[in-house]
Image 1: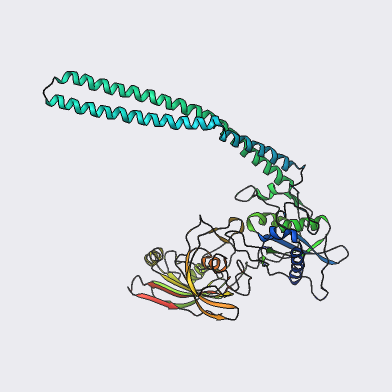
Image 2: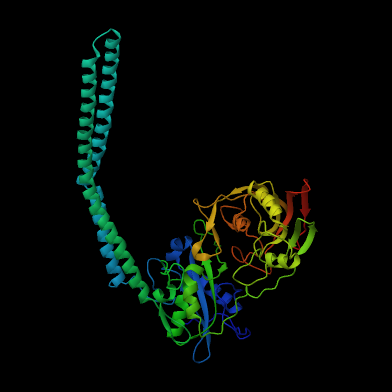
Length: 533
């Protein structure tokens, strides 16, 4: 299963530490291995249609007991309906075997699904539902007709009273009508209740089957997750149930353990191969809503893989997380008075404190203006984004500035370099966004996401790149990055984007112009900053 490199690798040094899988630059050997896998995948004509829909692949550079270097290959999930292909490592656990307990359990749940469908579509259930609707209609129509008759009778009595007739018989007549109405209501409602009771009995039977289906499915999933017994470099074993128990969701998500990275490490440990470096790449079209580019490398997913890989990497000498311990340059104060300040934030600096421990603008501002009151931070820039921010030195200024952001009277413009050329020189992008929970902090386009609108205008073309001016009308996380990279947007990722593009030394996105009304001076303020790219 270990593949030899087609090219001479004698001049390429092995990395000193194993890849930090959640943020990395692929090692040259990983790039060579990936190119070899891509050639193999492209040669398989029978997979062409399947792979056009997109698939994540992974490579793991390894050394064997003799000291020879090669690589392993894997795909996430299954490929062409099976978990096993001779070129790729096998699954950690093959749930697709015909005799596997998972397939048997699925068959039982499928049979239960058919029983539920048959019950819902049965003539008895349909007739019971129709009987309820008809009984309710009869109740409503009967009562409305009786009330209409009562109104007509009352009008006639009023005329008789006006003509001087004795009112006593008319009072008794009115009382009888009201009593008749109450008896009619009871009779009609009893018919409704009887119809509803029969319908409820049938619906309860169906709901019981649905609960049974949910219970069986949950039990089957946990049995499956317990079969995924993940190794680490120390030889320790933990199943998926144990690995996800400490997480906020407590149970593994669907598909856990089936990604390329865990498959690769599991096979290496089982076959006495030493992991050296790894990388994962996307092949095919981007999934709906996500930003995945054909042939590009991506980090391991957070939702499914982080708890697993945290365990599986124990015993290896792994690179430190490159996002930890960063000490970005200090911000530059562009303008300030007693109530607010405008700064030029450097790329790599957080706006507010995060779990990574990277220095933030909020921390820096508290040190620079220790007498400032209130939250200070009015709006945020992504850690990788540089440029202009306005800070408040007191609560009233903070509230006034924040109100301007809420009412969208603040104007923000961003300069960016794009990889490629957009089809149009200017326009409007409206793609709602929401968090991709399994790949935090990635965002994805989704109909049920929050509205996100961006105006854009090309400034100039620079070879294969485009300098562009963005004006976001909303302020969603990663809005400009997704709108630029998505095939539903500009289909041109921002240069240096390590989440939605190819990465690089820095994200070429800079908040270059900021306009707002000064809360105390009462005049419009406008600031500009030139990017260093």
